[in-house]
Length: 107
Image (cartoon, rainbow, N blue to C red; front, side):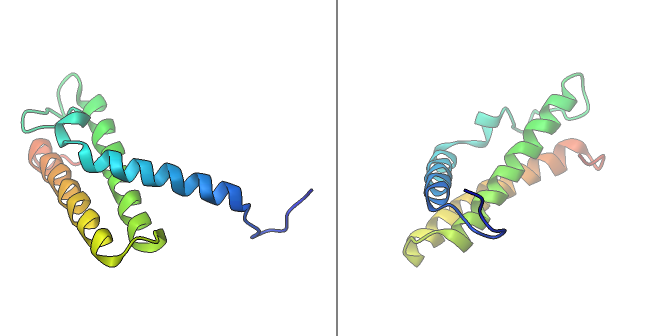
């Protein structure tokens, strides 16, 4: 059966939300170091491409999860606020590491 443009399969939405909820819980327990990023990370050395890719992935994941929490969850506002605060702080920590460790070279 073909669906009209804009029709959403409810099961797909439910499964997608379940996956995103699991990602939120996982990212809340992760440390920046779990992404192999810390104060010693060299984004310009031999492994610079690897670390740049990991940083971009971590930044993108944090941004998507923040957007999901703010726009798409049915959690109470206090719970959302706490999760957003934790994830936003981790995002800031990652972007600060990139900023400091690239010494202006950028990703």
